[in-house]
Length: 101
Image (tube, helix red, strand yellow):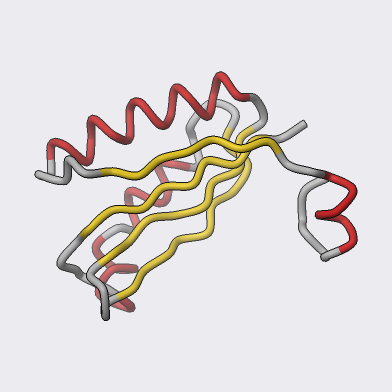
C-alpha cells in the first residue's frame, strides 16, 4: 500500500518556469528520499500558494519526509504549512486511471 502526503502553503513565488528553474536541485534531491515514489508539484500564483502531492511507500517514510520538509520550509520563513497523510483506495484509484496500485 502506498501513502499520499498532501502539502500546501502560502508562498510569494517564484511560479511557473522561474519556479522550475529555482527548485530543480530540490526536485532532484527529493528523488533520493527514503520511500519516495513520485510527486506532483502544485502552484497558484493567483492565491500565492504552492505545494505538492507526494507518494511514499510507507506511512513512516511519509511522516519522516513531512517532518523534515516542514522544518526546511520553516527555514525559509514558511511556518503555516498544511500537511496531511492519506492512504490510497487502490480499487477506486485504478478505475480513475491513477498511477498507483
